[in-house]
Image 1 (cartoon, rainbow, N blue to C red):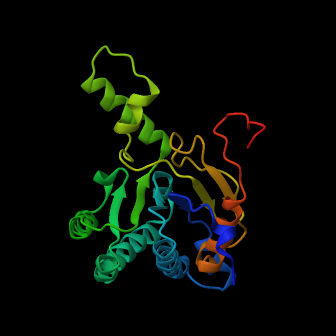
Image 2 (cartoon, rainbow, N blue to C red; image 1 turned 135 degrees about the horizontal axis):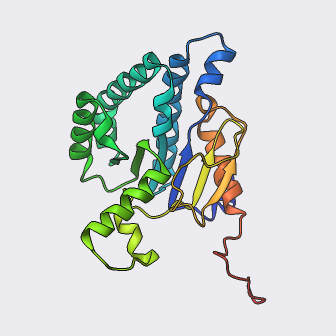
Length: 239
């Protein structure tokens, strides 16, 4: 049994780079899509845990713009899997008061998926519990560029200051992540939320995403609770 002391600091926003589905499948002699299917189970487990722990925002890096370089069958299989998961989980999400946001360059997605996403957003809009933010067809550099372009269109000739910028990113209204978890042993940010993670705590684990469940999530939260977040400031002697 874990003491609540270990989890005295619950992050408001946890973000996860879900990595290792392909390797998980390969190590078992399975098709990559089987790894993605098992990864959906990890999403369900981690969302349940976030709801239990009253984490306000859980964001997941589901598909990067670079992922279009994967085999066509895998990409199409992924989209189909997402539509199915959305349809299957909607009732549960509403019951658990989860609000769902899907953010990224959504214009490139298939009409079927866009329709499913819009339906899910509408039906969960009144959720007062955890907000699940799915980052889909997203790239940090793209986000910064589109924000700069939108700012310039709205404010011709005006100089931008950092405070102006947040409201033009696709994550406007979502607080920056307190904790970023990346699975499967990779220790890089991979063009994800480049602006938003300026002061985020990073947690890397060798666990492959399909094996990352509540126990692993709790370990990440325990590690976070022990960190001293200074935001670039010096710790004073009386702290």
